Each structure stands twice: as C-alpha cells, then as structure tokens.
Length: 92
Image 1 (cartoon, rainbow, N blue to C red):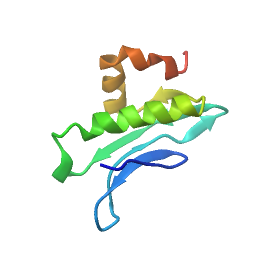
Image 2 (tube, one colour):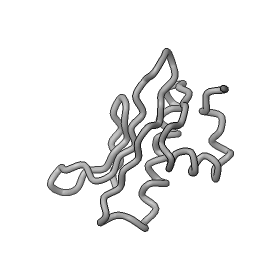
Image 3 (cartoon, rainbow, N blue to C red):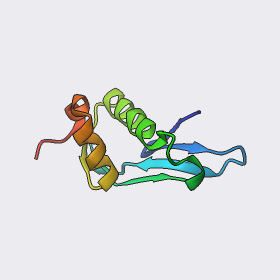
Image 4 (cartoon, one colour):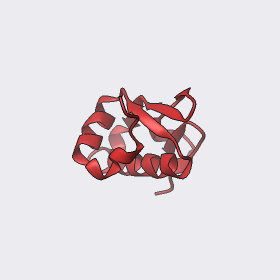
C-alpha cells in the first residue's frame, strides 16, 4: 500500500485515485499540528490501515521536527497504546 504524504495529511488512494484512508494534521501554531481526523473506508477496515497511517504520520512529524496535539479520538487511543511515540506530543 502506498501512503501519500502531503503538507497536512497522510493518505491512501484507490486505483481510481479516490482517497480511501487519511489522517489530517493542520498546523495550529509554529511547529505544532493538530491530529484532528482519521478516516478509513469500510472496504479497508479491520486491516490495520488506521494504525499504519498513524505510524506514517509520526514518521512525517519527526522528519519535519513538528509536535502534535490530539483531538481525534482514534489518535488519542493510538498514542495511549504507543508510548514510544510520545516524543512528538506537545507538552501541555
């Protein structure tokens, strides 16, 4: 599966070039993004795609020296289960 990295999202398109899975993270202040939305099409659910999107997002944010706050309920749960990724979280 090919993950596409954009400036404020990581996503997957199907063979018709329609977005079928995405994590969005708009910039909210200098060097800080808000992971605010995760979506996976029904056809992909149960395959671990959302988790792989989060891994790609973490990699993207680390590479770009960005921190994150979490308002997406899936992201909150995922980061609780992956404390090794807490380094990208903005201190509150």
